[in-house]
Amino acid sequence: MRIVTAGESHGKCLVGIIEGFPAHVPLDREQINYDLWRRQQGYGRGPRMAIEKDEIIILGGVRGGLTLGSPIAFQIKNRDYENWQGYLDPWGPIKSGREVEQPRPGHADLAGAVKYGFRDIRNVIERSSARETAVRVAVGSIAGQLLALFQIRAVSHVVSIGQVQLKERVSDFSALETADESVVRCVDPIVTEEMVQEIRRAEREGDSLGGIFEIRITGVPIGLGSYVHWDRKLDGKLAQALMSIQGIKGVEIGDGFQSAKNRGSQTHDPIFFSQEQGYYRLTNHCGGIEGGVSNGEDIVIRCAMKPIPTLTKPLETVNIRTKEPALAGVERSDTCAVP
Image 1 (cartoon, rainbow, N blue to C red):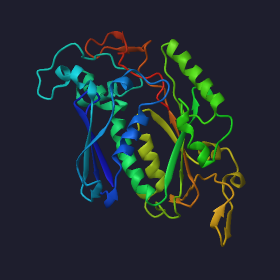
Image 2 (image 1 turned 90 degrees about the vertical axis):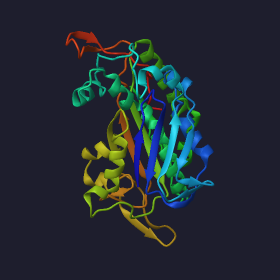
Image 3 (image 1 turned 90 degrees about the horizontal axis):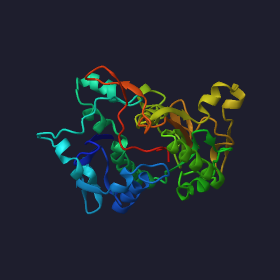
Image 4 (image 1 turned 180 degrees about the horizontal axis):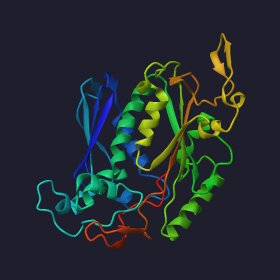
């Protein structure tokens, strides 16, 4: 299965194509739109979230609510396009006034402009923007509906924001399903309030915050992935997909980096068997994946997201046209997008 995304942050729409999706899978449009709504929630989000009301428009590959086996094509309109049409019209002429010449440290601005020889960084910003993740949320919702047919479910929750973090690891799946009740998607109400205060402090100071979130996937059978082919290892494929999300700088499976500090006896999970359960473990330090293959336990992944590069108190940079010192450009952005 492969996905392709297209479109600019303030362009007419975002577009997604899914190749290799099986036929006869029932899709729930309302579930997809609900997941798109979830993407826009969370304390610390910027004013763009109040403008957009993302909804999927299927263009092909689905008929009567069932997938056809052919590529699934869809679009998500950008409601803000009416304010940007003159600046992003595919055929021009392009209005002046929204050119960007001061690259933001930590973003793709400078590297993208140099790579493609752009004089206006707007060409980079519009595509490197995390607005592109709206397409991936829609794709993820569609994929989730396929996985649900096999009783495979995933939940996620926020482990830390800035210096505030959960005191203990939460492994109970039903408890993690309550994360949406928190404005920062943290299952502990006391830590939730501490995270909110941390975001408020950063916002007052014109700064931004990153954090760590955890994904737990249950119902995964033994044997997904490969120990034979390097490019089909399940942990490798998951890590690549997650690292490709804007702002993600680290991915760990199970105990991850902590396992580098522990001894082997503290790291590996003893194997047991019973007629009722089959093979099982009492611990899950490996996070459900061994040798690139799922082992039947819950898959546990944590991702580290850096603070967003757009700051209302911008950092020093260089004007790419004059080469003179300048302050980084300021685009509409979030204080914290971890939730």
